[in-house]
Length: 433
Image 1 (spheres, rainbow, N blue to C red):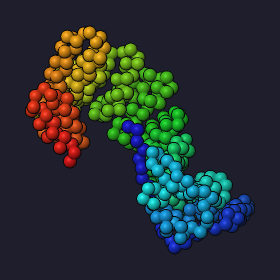
Image 2: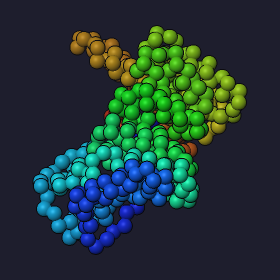
Image 3: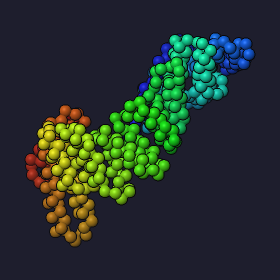
Image 4: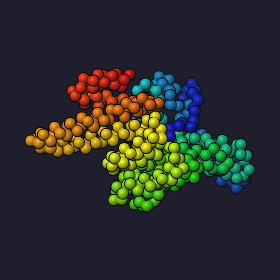
């Protein structure tokens, strides 16, 4: 669930020289355009406001003129004649970068020596230049400027907000990223622009939730829902987290119940729903009732029984879980996840036995041996469903997971029978491919 949609909106062109102009020149151009907009006669003309919008956008773009991610360090050095204030090695999002601090921006080069992040630290003109440019263009539109002239300008502003938001997110500033993603969505839906950036709405909500801005998270997730944009059901799980942060368990349940009936395979919805029922001391088995409507609508969908099996497995009702997975296999004998679920039930039983063994006193060796014998049988019981899962699955990730479990299980059983040693070597070779 917790993922941001990564997509850079702008493609910058590479020129032969870094063309940043003095801040004073940018400020002078903005002041001149502002003075015209404040003149009673000139303020009635759309061209006046178009010029003001252009002045703001020119000032906004000035610090990053012709600089784009992807430049190698040598090319950047030729383009940029300014000596760095400092150069340091930093870690951002778990990755190592070389950071150069310049007068107006910080640039980050990745391990391959390519420019990965450009962060403007000092704009040529103070203020929200993108927002001011947008207001100027909207005023020009109100005064008669044509759609075809204004819509591309507003899209440019929305795209710039989106790119800046991505930079803030990359640098770990979730609150700033949320503000900027919000700007990207809002300007993408400002008339006459009609190219709504719904990813920006989702990302604004996502980063708002991460920065505990619950009101915005709720507002922008609901904007997504109003556009039938659910991120494969993840938004219902996220909205449940927002509701729980506001101590509204009933609304949280409603979001999750709705999400589960629409997206029964969504792991985040299911996990949040089980945890919520456990936290409120309610019977998680009630969740199974929510699947009934989906089963009526999709009686031949084995994944619904996989979800039911997961619910029972989550509350350690292993018999009910096994019955649900087997029901899924009755519908589709080649349903890989049902086999995977059966194997996981065996492993969960094994975990319970191991916990009991670890709790024994050292003198209770007879009991230990009895439990160890049970554990061996449980591990043996997990092998067949994992093998079937590997055999029938066409999903490389599922096959890889099944192979890895088979490798580990056969390793655990290698001293029980030589065939397990041979099977361990087989699966170890498959996993190593």
